[in-house]
Length: 302
Length: 274
Image (cartoon, rainbow over all chains, first blue to last red; front, side, top):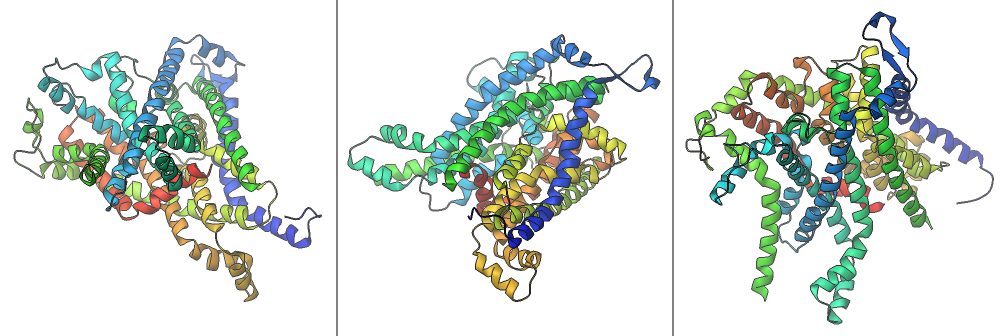
């Protein structure tokens, strides 16, 4: 690229480029930027329940101080964090396993590919419904196996701890195949010659995995982890379908609490404050991702 | 040696396939059982007397065809809009000398990371003020934006690979720059456009939270919401739900079965490039 002053041709390209980016920019303004801006405005206002005619009154940071004093905010945040801590490494491990299995030289490739694509294409809520059916007390297939193994069938979805684990299993199943697809692409980009050279040097399969596969896979693992973390912050569909947040609010996530506050309790100001807090939490995760992609974008242009 | 290697390959394939298919297969088997058989303990695996009664029920007890139509309209129109808008953006970002290209691309990607729930709260209010609740537009516009980052990324990677000479040639022949985009660049990167379209369609078809929020009228529900809310109206009717689930996932399964290679390519293009 030249470093000279822009030529008329450059300028006309810029004008056209701006024009072509305009529809996307307008949609972003309407659907993302404007709502996010009003989100913060809304979070500083509240409707006085005793006097709703007065409209939305400015309440300053009241909604935020209320959130920090709200046990349900903290427990649902804690649940979200625990889901992240369990399902991100869980999905990574299972996804890595699936990717290694799927990286074998199959003559017919479509069944394995579909095996990875199907969980991805299945709507999250449907995965939740199906796993709810698996974990039914009497008619679920999981308890049927446990009984066959001579164990007492537990009440999966009405026990707070077990319901949490059942949800984690469903999330990990659903998320691991997308991870496997990303890691598989990373695996296939590793040059075969590296393994051949390692074999000549007498490296075992395990040594090859630790010395070649894992280091070469690091960028793919990193991106997959970030994607998974950002999705996990927003966990909603699967617990909604499996337990509705119950028993009580034992499996409720922050996203579910926000949804309830806003649409069931119609407490818009407070819901907005909670949503704004969530926004801040996930921007921290996103900025990490951005820093990473921009760094690697710079690298590939060198 | 050859034998063990072969059995390892077979075993690997089996694990991946069983892991991916068992929930769908189990729901399919469930949907073919009678209600009495479903309540039976111990449970049965293969249906004793396969029946399509549940499917009849699924089509009659709830307006599932209406849900499906809603999903088709919302997913179809948002996909078309998304591909159009993203194609223009991807073209500007890859084939024109634009300043701050990387910054714009990063900002676009940042949108993909926004928590939907944070967006949902104010968006609900915006849509209510615009009088768009319970209209298709309330979902089409957000779905377009949600898939815009991945679609732009996928198409940009395809646009990049087209030699600039082809475009120059079309322009010498009297095409305008935008004409060259639609007559040369888009047809040549058809696989990319197609991949983007499938990803956008699946994203829209599967979305739940916004669909649940923006449509409170039963007749406007999409499939994912319509079926999930069966539970509120009956005491968890598994026969009905299993049949409805199969009806809802068959179109998506056919779509990804036909275009699996492209879907995989598109899904991973975002990640591996990074």
